[in-house]
Length: 377
Image (cartoon, rainbow, N blue to C red; front, side, top):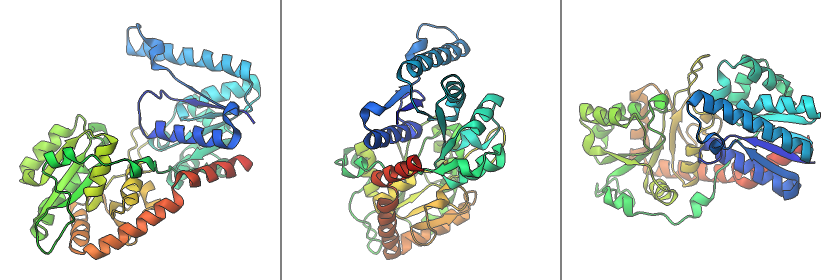
């Protein structure tokens, strides 16, 4: 079997790109390198053109022509569209070349309304690879995709993050202590961590909810630092909020970090928290399609606090790996943080169980097994 994977631009490193790379790697290991090719949209195709709308049309047109040429020469048996935006190209290839095509579905891009051609191509695909049962449910409910055409292929943990030597220098410059948290002596501040973009378009991640929970937490556990990793256009608003709440001395904005620095952050934290809200709105849905940062924190043996609704509930077991809360309630977030920070042995056990669960179910080898089973089916 020859498989052609159509991908979005791979110049950046986001969740979609990481998932696409993992999928291509698994396919090549299962089918051999010569039987798997990836063709990604190249942003530089439009260099020198003026106007974003024209740039988009030019890039899309170049990509369609390049795809048709490659398919004509190479004659793939299966085309996998690594995003719903590419699904119409997969449909076109099937019509012209009689090859099968699949589509990968992540989250918000298929939770709401779609253009006619995207929806048509999505419904005509022989198979859809959904990264979560939550997204699968929306495909069935919102777009009337037949359930038997949808296969679950959850995200995997990039275990390189676990083996990379942590870079502690930046944390120490920020005043973050790296010694274990001794609650009884109060010699070190406990570290609560959130990792995520600080974008106005992604306020659903809940940074502000954690900040509003912090005063209540500090009343019970005074030695707490809230470490925020990530940057974006919403940072200034969040910094002003810390001033308004009077918690600025307990909040550290680390900004963008390297993988080695991120590993250090995960190792140093005591609790990972991200009360990401899921909003199913036809025009502007919001939420985590999966929540890979939860997997990363759990893999480092940390208890997690997440939302009680949405895709993360599929792999975070309440009371076993951490605590699930109402993502809009600062009071519930505060209670969960206080529980884990004042019961360190319980928190440690949750972290250990969560780590074992992630390594068992969300490793690369488990991901490859799932890909193999889908291909065989």
